[in-house]
Amino acid sequence: MFKDTHSKCANFCTEIINNTDLEELKKSFIEILTHDLKTPILAQIRMLDMMIEGKFGNLNGEQSEMLNLTLESCNYMYTMVATLISTYKFDLEETELNYSHFNIMQIIEKTISKTKTYLKENNLKVVIIPEIKTPIVAGDTIRLTKVIQTIFYNSVNSAFRNSIIKIYLKENNNNFSVKFESHSGYITPEQMKKRFQFHSYHTEKYDKIGTGIGLFLVNKIIEKHHGRIIAESYISQKNILGFEIPKEAIGKFYYENCV
Image 1: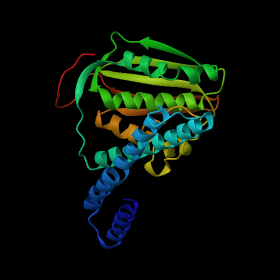
Image 2: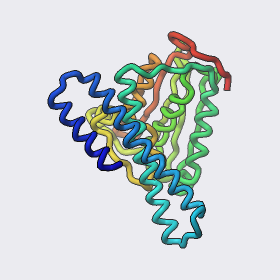
Image 3: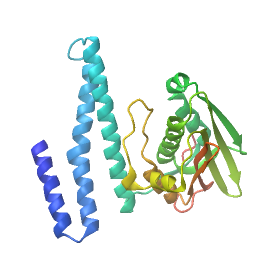
Image 4: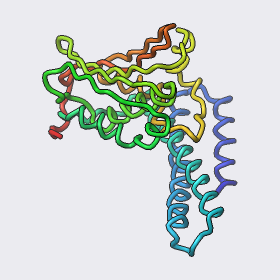
């Protein structure tokens, strides 16, 4: 399998040199990522899960620790590959949004609950400040959930210990905004811009909480919703990450499902 994958990657590199049809190359790249990388990684994750659960026999402490570290690495790689696939599909405009009405407050609360252990270990507190009439908005629930998770993870991972993370929900005319404010190191405009660029995607340390889908793809998703990214940094060591989208859907409504 790995020999075949290596051969396909080599052939793909040759095509880049000889072929000027970039759209076809992108489609070929997605196929390689999906069938030759994503699928094997998923199989490895399932196998590791079974081993950790003791399906093939009991494990000692050291074995369990090593398998968990390997599983964490595989999960991270799987997220990376999935992010690349989603990114290229957005570039090729092959991705349609599945709009629905959903409760954005519930998604934020679920995201926070998944990080309780990390928050406690770093003595971080989260405060939600809703300045809205209703938490019901229109959008692609699955993708906006990933956007919220990614921005929140970034805010939490960079926040100083013993600090407070504030989440602002606001309505402005026909728009709805979510802002995550954290106390963390100052980010220059140049550095902030690079955070949302595809080529600057970097590996997070494994002692951080979930990596989400990457800020580059976050920006793509928000643009697809006809919205905008909010990214501000102040020398007073306050950072704000968030987004603003129309409260109601712009374009075709694929299905309705009130959460």
